[in-house]
Amino acid sequence: MKPAEVSTPSDREVLVKRSFNAPVNLVWQAYTDPALMRRWLTAMPGWSMPVCEMAAHVGGKYRWRWREDESGQEFGFTGEFLEVALHSKIVHTQIYDPGDMGGSMGGEPSIITVTFNETNGITNVATSIKFASQADRDAAFSTGMTDGMEMSYKELDGVLAG
Amino acid sequence: MFVDGLDQALAALADPTRRGIVVHLARGEASVSDLVGLFSLTQPTISSHLKVLESAGLISRSRVAQSRPCKLKTEQLNAVADWLKQVQEIFEGNYKRLDVLLVELKQAQKEERKK
Image (cartoon, rainbow over all chains, first blue to last red; front, side, top):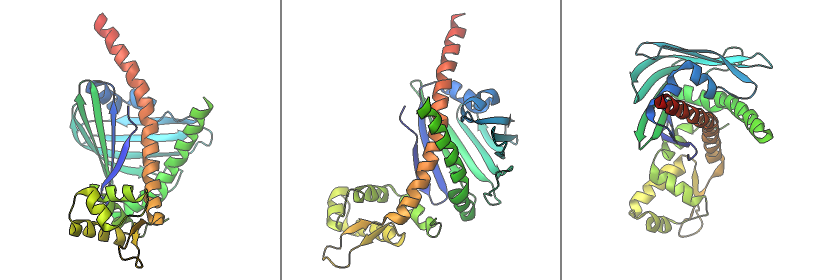
């Protein structure tokens, strides 16, 4: 599949698009079943996902937390589901939980919208991250994403070594 | 970090024509008439896009030459591009693992159907 495409449809929004070679019911399962989510959303070498709680229905909450096994440091995200349409759309709020990693994403939750669309056995997934305010976006720009960057580099090291 | 002006930079890059102009300028300088020909748009339309890009600090325009060629200003653009690249790498890292998981789920579904 082609690598994920990232664009900025507006000054507060980041859109990520990717296609998967699988029918939508399986992609949906991978996005909503905690046991499956733990395997792809988190499997960075040296990291685990000790908490992955999902109540994937409107008004339900979720709690995700990652831990770097070596240092024991944790961070995560929490939020609430605003819309859940089977095999088609998930909308949820997202609040950064600094754990003991520190940093902040501002006060207001971001809104994450994930849409699923299957054509001939290929499922197209579009993820929109809408920041609540300029401050939240700037915080993500200058801190949160840098943390993520370090993780992805570590992961890259693992891939190159393997 | 160039969080100053990030609003303008992201808003400027939200437009597909302006992204196209930026991609084209990444290959080298171009004049308004070059861009008019390339994008099949009118000169005032191209000029207004260039104005947005210029005030967002993404391009500069020569004051010297008659044709006022446009040139990318890399500082602000690199900050935005680096950020988007980070986002891309984080997501793609996850997605590669999801690809592997989906192969497994498809296989399991197939076996289930055989029964």
